[in-house]
Image (cartoon, rainbow, N blue to C red):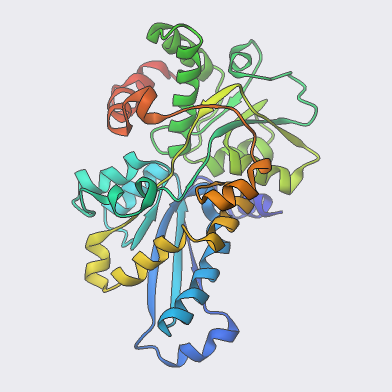
Length: 344
């Protein structure tokens, strides 16, 4: 099983780098090394399987279109840590991270990408979406049905560290939104609820994949707060051991993509990187996105695959929290709400 392989290799919670090489049928292009280009996609933990399928499709697309060979390097880890790696010199041509706030770091702190990066691709540069669900052990022995059940005595909740993981920040805000909505908008009630929830968390991994392994392989916890696609991966790997619980309310997760302008201009890979990110919006790529349980944005593919995704109320980061800039400042900066709430 893939999760067991990751556990044995000791890479959970850490950024990893892999190289996708040309297939044999494209070997003819390898005879023209002067034309070959390589791009590095720095992404967050749970997209490993998605881009393992997307990248070979784009290689063929690019070879047919440009008569040029190319290879991928792929890096994965907690979204916040990945953003800092790029900020500190990792030469990413593109970033496909868990939330806009992590990409904004590259704009605000490093001037590595253009200020209007979200305007360069459709839907605010978000080719797919997701949400947060619960993964529980088969039979749901603790009878966990909604967010309120997570703060009951004796329930251990597994979620990663919001300081390093984008998925963890979505988890945090989904819980906060649920508590606020169910308490007539009370910030005090939301703060108290989320504080109780984190008192139930025995360990904070650095990334979403690390938390998945903690829950599924190490056997720790009663419920995992998980990306929807990550929960379905666990079912695909060991469906006889787990089940998914969809809460009454969650948050619309919007993991965006962007070109790292300073890198592509230096390497001469802008055309290739641009074509790659645009490819994510094609019907071919959107079908792979849906297959991997990310919610597609293409209307045709969305209609064809709607039965694959649970229906639930979804709040948005913009309406509920004023966007990622405000959310980051209030909740996740040093000394913010998370630091005040979580005491190990």
